[in-house]
Length: 321
Image 1 (tube, rainbow, N blue to C red):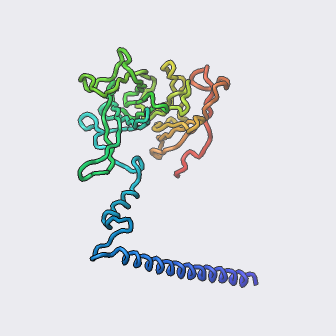
Image 2: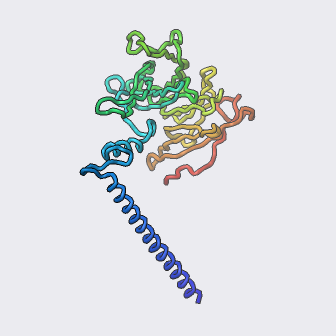
Image 3: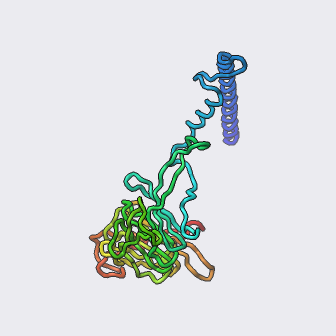
């Protein structure tokens, strides 16, 4: 009895859906017929000697171009290849990052040639055949060349006032605007400083890793003690105090794998790393997460006794499996 009731209920729902679909089709058909009638009337009113004029007074070709232009995405919403962003001898670009500085779009690129290049991006309206088309022009305003190995990663600070970079020779550099005395890094290939160029200098040279430094990240809130974090093939994650330019915390991967990526969460409450554990099964990627301690927490198990503990969280280590 229950099965028969369910069958009748399902049949009733199917009939209702079919009836609704037929009604919708009939309504759409009527709407299309009315629209066609209005279109025919409009065309007949604006036809003259075989030429069709748009109600706005524009020809159909001009109207089409105008409508297409109105539907194009605004500058900044479309992708464009920046052909002018190149490094010495067309060496590979390994990392890029962008920011806004005083209303200007800025890009920094890191290359296989061991240099950083700062670029100023501007929107330019095309001419001739490209009339009205907006392109992006790029101008190199600084070249920073104090790395002695390929630069694996480069990142702007959250406030856009500093740049951090790391290389394959286990070094990190923090850069800041200005001449910087003896550490001035604005060289432009040994040439004189060109008009419109900028002065940058190496503020800190950070050493401590024992292997290639693969990735780095700024603390999102500009934390004084944990301002910058880096990771390396040596199996460690290190945090740097940029008020004095020294290592403040060293964290280790429990599996002693190769750490290849590191990042804070947007609130700066957690620190995540991606590692590859080397075992008999081969390379296996996994994630590890630490809770960032409050400044007023007590001392405990870190590499420096005067720092609060970093608690390793338990989580699904390989969610992609």
